[in-house]
Amino acid sequence: MVLINKIRKYSWILRALLPSIWFNFKQLPISQAIKLPILLYKPKFVATSGRIVIDCPVKFGMIKLGCNCVSIYPNNGIIYENKGVITFKGSVLIGNNSSIAVGAGGHLVLDDFFRATAALKLICYNSVQFGREVLVGWNCMFSDTDFHKLTFINTGRYSKGFGNIEIGHNCWFANSCKVYKNINLPPNCVVASDTILYKHISCDPYSLICNENPIEIKAVGIYHNWKDDKINYTE
Image (cartoon, rainbow, N blue to C red; front, side, top):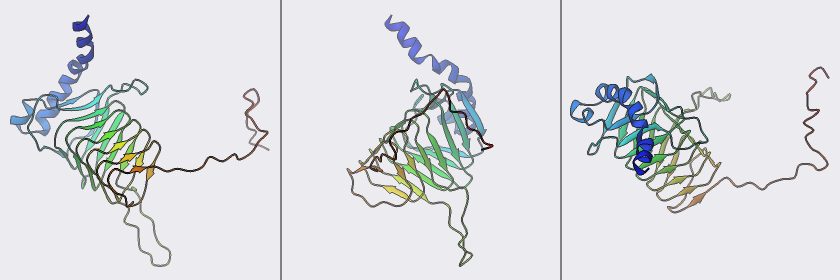
C-alpha cells in the first residue's frame, strides 16, 4: 500500500517528462539541462523566447511548475510566457492553475524555497524579485505594470505605468492577495487574506499587513427571493 501511494503521489512526473525534456534543453546549457532541473506539468507555452538562469547548484526536479497542489482549483497545469529573463536561485514550486508572464524588458527573480500553492498570477514587465522562503497562498496576483498609462490634463504628461516589486525573505501572503507596482516589503512580514498592496508602504520587518475595513449594515428588511429575481430591463 505504501508503494502504491508513492506511485500515485509522483505519477505526475511521468506526464511532465516529455515537455520538460524539450523545455530544459531549449532553455538551459547542456550541463544543466541534462539533469532536468525544471519539471512542467500540463504546460501551455505562450512564449519561450526569453532566457532562464539557474543561479545555484542544479539537481533533478528542483523547479516544479504547474503540479497539482490544491484540489479546489482545476488541475490544468501552468501557462508560461517568457520574453525576458527568469532567474531561479534555488528550489521553486508553483502549483496548478497558475500563470507566469514576463515581458521583453522584464526580470523575474525567484529565490530558494519559493512556494505558491495554486492559481498564482505572476506578471513581470519590469522587475519582480522574491527573497528566499516566500510562501504565497492560492489565488494571489503580483503585477509590476498597469499595462496602460494615464494622461494629466494640466500638463499633458503621462503616468509611468510600471515599477518594481521587491519581496523580502520569509514573507507569507495568505490567499487572494494582490500586489502591484512600487511595493518593497521587508523580510518576515505576513500579508493577510484579500489584502491589496497598490502603493509604497513603510513598515518594519515582522509586520502583519492588511486592508481592514469595518463591516457596514447598509439596510434591513431586505432579502433575495430566488423564485422571482429576473431583472426587467425595459422598466
